Amino acid sequence: MSIVELRGLSVRAGSTALISDVTLGVEAGTWCTIVGPNGAGKTTLVETIAGLRRPSKGTVSIAGEYVSSMSERERALRVALVTQHPNVPAGMSVHDYVALGRTAYHGLLRAPGVGDRQAVSSVLTRLSLDEYANRDVATLSGGERQRMVLARALAQATMVMVLDEPITGLDLRHQITMLELLQKEVRECGLTVIATLHDLTLAGQFADRLVLLDHGRLVLDGPSGEVVRSQELADCYGMKLRVIDVDGADVVIPVRH
Amino acid sequence: MALVAVAMIVALAAAVVCGLVVGPTSIATARVLGDVLSRVGFGHTTLTPTQSLIVWQVRAPRMVLGLLAGAMLAVAGGTYQGVFRNPLADPYLLGVAAGAGLGATLAIVDVGGGLTTPGWTPVLAFGGAIVAVTLTWVIGGRGLRSSTSTLILAGVAVASLFTSTQTFLQQQSSTNSIARVYIWLLGSLASASWSSVTLVLPYVVVCVVICVAAGRALDVMSVGEDESRSLGLPVRRVRFIVIAASSLGTAAIVSAVGLIGFVGIIVPHIVRLLVGTSYRRILPISVVFGAAFLVFADTIARTVMAPSELPLGVVTAIVGAPVFVLILSLRRQMVT
Image 1 (cartoon, chains in turn brown, green):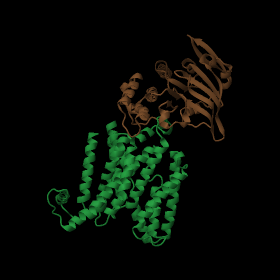
Image 2 (cartoon, chains in turn orange, red):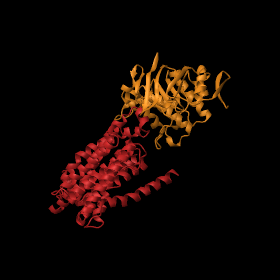
Image 3 (cartoon, one colour):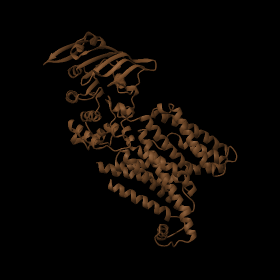
Image 4 (cartoon, helix red, strand yellow):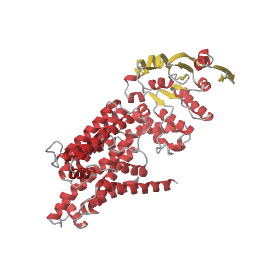
């Protein structure tokens, strides 16, 4: 049963088609990664799923309800968003930043309740951010900062999380740490993840399923192992790709002509 | 925070005492305070009828109007800085000052005929401010769909249009009228009365309450428009409400006291240096410090060159800038 359903989705910016007729279903408790070259429409797609863009045609629904007919609060209770370049306001503490994830629960005129404080505390512990709780967000390293942004999204306690290039700017170790934290949430808490990634190796290793986009159109949708070996993937990037098996994990290597 | 709370109480109490006690006519502090106590049922007043008139019909309304103006301008400045995520934003960003300036100039130079009575200046200033902000809102992307940067640009365009029209009117008018326009532009509490207090009070109370209540929403907005929407914030509705409240309150104050600059920028920044970046703290504390700051500035304005007065806008800048620099350097020292 799909928790996220895209039916004939098209998104335009003026006369330019950004997404054209995409139909896709993502099952609850799975990880779906969207891959494709620059300009394929990956960011537009996740922003539309998160309700930040309105479809020009077609629909996006989460748990059977249309995203475009939800209020901001209703959306925030169903889908959390991690953007490619999150704004981190200097001067705010890590605790207060993560607590922003509870806004939809306590509203704008009430202070966070006991449940909200427990949810924030639990997320800080799960992501090993306890010791940073009182630190100014501006003093965190890139890896710590990205973990904090993930914590804010997890504090929203939604069924679905969409992430746009969540590992941009992180070193290898922090990339893996971030993706493993996310995978743990999928496996242990039943979170549904829709993410965009440029790194095809990591995309293949962490996602249950890959969706290949090019020029706003869905080119291929299938299990990670099949998509990374497909000719369509190589064609979209316009280059030869080799996939080698390293201890049971697929590693995608671009080959220079 | 406890220290800040004490500082707030002390500043406010000192401002009230200053406003009632200090002035060109010397009246002993104890006698003024004795009169205040006698009005709430403790002891007897020792003020003469003339002194009582000076305290309650001249100084008290001026002090109360100063408190209201300082509170409104400071909280509106803080709110604008939050909603536009721009530390340089002040309450006049969307054209309130230019609109009010044009309105007041129209009244003072009397282009329409019959408008030179002092009563018309605040009415036209208020009208001009509201017209300017509404125009900015409409031009800057038709209200709710606009982005903050488009609104700011529209504000610049509208302010330029209104200011040039005002300059043209001044150029066509007499030297005497130009001098009166400049006196109004630099702000003053000299014409304060209980009726002007009664006129602005409802606007200020409602608008200050709305701005302070928006503190939590502005904290969420500090992560940007898209992210705050994804956190459940109805960004455009919140923006409309806080801009409307800040502009309406500022327009009411400007119509009563003219253009007093600097309070809206400097007070929220000083408060930010003291209590951090959360608007839940910045806005209510700015209300108190803004109120006290303006009464102190007015006390200086009306006493330094007595019996003539310094323009209030000049005093707020001369007093505010060094205080701001001092706090900034103290803060730097504490951090290093």
